[in-house]
Length: 261
Image (cartoon, rainbow, N blue to C red; front, side):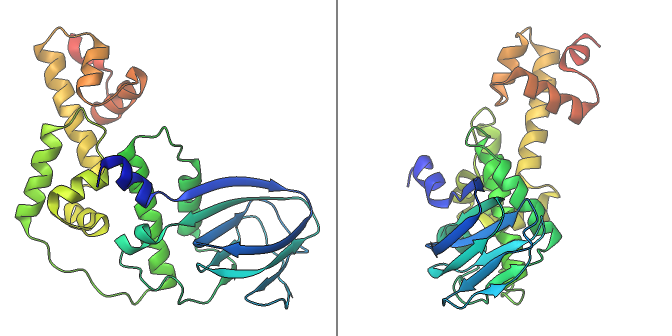
C-alpha cells in the first residue's frame, strides 16, 4: 500500500454545515458525529424508524450514530453544525470493531470528545500528515472509550519494533512523516504503535519528531552557514515561519538568536 493510499484509507470526512430550517430523512453510511454550533429548541429526530422524538439540543451537544442507520431529523430554525464521518479502517486501528453495536447518542457530549471533534474539523488537508493522523487517531481512540469502555487491553510490544521506527524517524527527519509510515516500520497498527511509542519514549510520535527536528536544527545552526530556509527544509519545514515558531517553543529563543549566541 502506498503512502497516499494509506492516507485515503484512514481519512475521516469533516465538514462545517449551514442549513436552513427544515431537515428531512438521512442515511449514515459510516459512523457519524454531529456537533451543533447553535441551540435548537425545536429539534426532532427519529433513528431507525419514522417515530420522531422532540429532543432540544444546545450548542456543544449533538448526536453519534452507527453506520448504516437511517432516520429523520427536523428543526424549526437555521442550523450550523460540524459533521464527521469515521471510516471503518480508522476505528479498527483503535480496536473498535463494534461500530454498529451501540445505542445512538443524542444529547450531551463528553467534553473531551467535543474538543477532538472541533480539532478534527479544523485540521485541513494542507496540515502535516503526522499532525492530521495524530488528531484523527486521538479522536477515534477517545470515541471508542466513550462508546465501548470495556474494550480489551493492549498486547505487549517488543522494543526492537520501536527501534526500527526510531531509526526510520532519524533517517527521514526532512520527510512528511505519517503514523502510517512509522507504524508500518514497527509492524503495528497505528493505535498500538502510538501507545507503545509514548510509553517507551515519554513522548507521542508527533512530539518526538518535533523534538528531534529541533535538535538537528540546533546542530545545523551552530555548525553550518546554511540560510534559514535551507535549515528549515532540512528538518521538514517548508514554511520558515512555522519552523521558527516550533524552534522558539522548543528552545525559548529564535533560530537567528540561537545562531548568533
